Every structure is written in structure tokens, then in C-alpha cells.
Length: 278
Picture 1: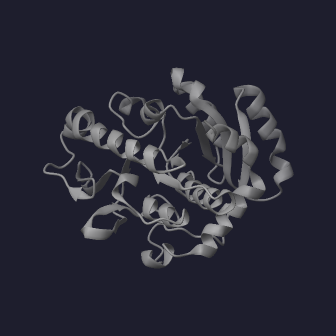
Picture 2: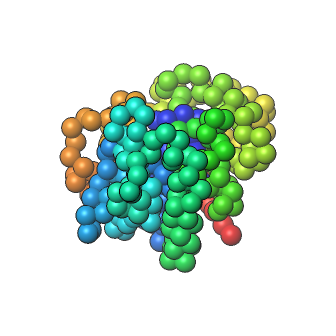
């Protein structure tokens, strides 16, 4: 499972790259999964079913067609305090507002749909790469969240934590996130520093300090990929609404291969594969 210290840390990007790498180089039937996404950047699949664009892109990176079980819940904001709920590709009868989503939906229809999707994936794929949302350290959301550490517990998977170096404060965000995870900290088996610019040797002392201070392995440092573009779903991202047509992104094999190569050349792939072995 790929989680981040913040929104736009690069989770979707890394999941897409891992999907392509595992399918291309290891001939694995790999499935991307994100239980709940919030974005108006969606994608229509067969039968007019709707899922997040990110999971559609990741599916194509894996060489498979996008399906609703890859993103069973999509929240489409209508305004600051209300969102439409897309459940298994179709609009749900009630919007997510006035605490209905957290207090009612997540514990009934929501978690049921997530479990059914994961059960299907487990029976039909060799491996799954799960993406979290935002940060797992949002204490105010932990009681009813169904997208970060709760899903890690449901599936009993190891977690890789991704931090955005480019925005600054990545060391503090890693340490702070780990400190707030409580018992779930034990699930974090690795850290990826993403979007690094400049001489990588200047960051080596930060890598060593992070490993010594946290006791968690730094799986690698990914350079800033300025020439590789996948459309973002997060409105805070610098890639949001850059005008690239979604249908072109879904068939962008050169970009998928470039991300896969970036991961292959900069991360400890043997370590990652050992985490995925059952």
C-alpha cells in the first residue's frame, strides 16, 4: 500500500509506475486499488459507470481495462460541504453531507463495497497495489476513514510512506506522520522521498538521518520527473487541469514506461518485491 504524508505527494504516480513495472518486467497480473477517492476528475468506463481518472490511468499502466472494483467509492464535490457519492460506478441516493458519509455510509454501504472489491481482486489477480488518500495522520478522520490505515489493516498489507521533497519540510512530515500513527506505525515498512531536484548526493545525509531516527528503511529517492506527465486529480497539484485530454493519458505507454524505469532505477526493487511476497 502506498500512502503519503500529504495530498499530491506522488501516490498515484508511484502506483501507476509500480503497476507498469510489475506487469512489464515480472509478467504479473497486477490490479490498482483505491477504496475511496475525492475528485471531479473522473472517467467513464463501460455501461456509463464512473470511477476516478487516477485508477483508470493506473489500470491502463498495468495493461488491463479500468473497472469499478478498482475504485468502489468516488466522492465528487458539489460545494465545500457536500459531495455526490458514486458507489460502484453509479450515483448513490444521498449526497455526502451533514456527517451522513462518515457516521452512516462508511460503516454500511461503504465498507461493504470495499470488502467486496478487495475479495474479487484477491481471487483474480496476482498482486494489488493499494493507494491511500491524503495523509493517514488526520486524527479527526480516523474513527470512520476507509481509505488509509483501516484498509491496510483490512488487507494486512505493508505500507510505503511517500513524502514530497519539492515542497519542503519532508523530514518533518515523515517524522510527524509516523508519530501520529500509533500502533499503525508498525505497518510502515519503507519511506520514499519523491520529487527531488538537484544533486542527489546532497540528500544522502537526510536519508541516513531518517533511517537512524525512525528505524524505517528509506526505499529510495525519486528525482523530479519534469518531463513525465499524468493528469492529477488533486486540485492542489501543479498538474491539475493542464489541458491534456484524458483519453490520451490512458494510452500513454511511453509515460508509463518512463515512470516504471524511474522506479526501477531509483528504488530498492528487491526490498519492495520482498514486501509483496506472501
